[in-house]
Length: 184
Image 1: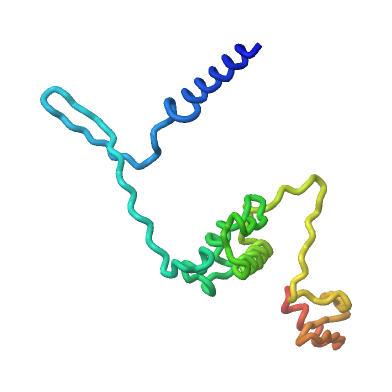
Image 2: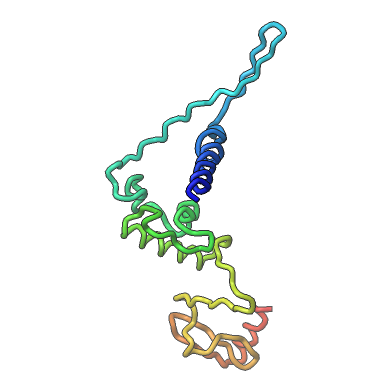
């Protein structure tokens, strides 16, 4: 009874050793330079691994997060989508702080910038899939007319004008005649 389990355990270790860890592992992935050496009638082609250049050191290595380390604290905005896309998931949500390594202050700033970039339409490829028949909610912006005022339109009887937050109705036929000609 114990012998088959030991045999299975031994085979599992053997196959794990062969295929999982060391013997059949693929070679390291690095840049290689193809060298062609011709000696008499023999041509030897070999790939030599090129050493990677050292990454530049950040200007502030004692910084708490990547943004603080590279002195980018007040140098980004919602239009810097290349910077913002490093901190968001494929569906447009923010990655958690434990993954990004951002401090609390910069995480909040990045979250606000991501939200503003979404609303501005700068991240069109980072949208969650919507269920069928779902109509997305339109966000209210500060520049929209408040709902207590009627929408402005031009007819033959009224001309509405929105200026400095005050709604004016113009009913003079001469002004209406000139406005309707100007809009055609």
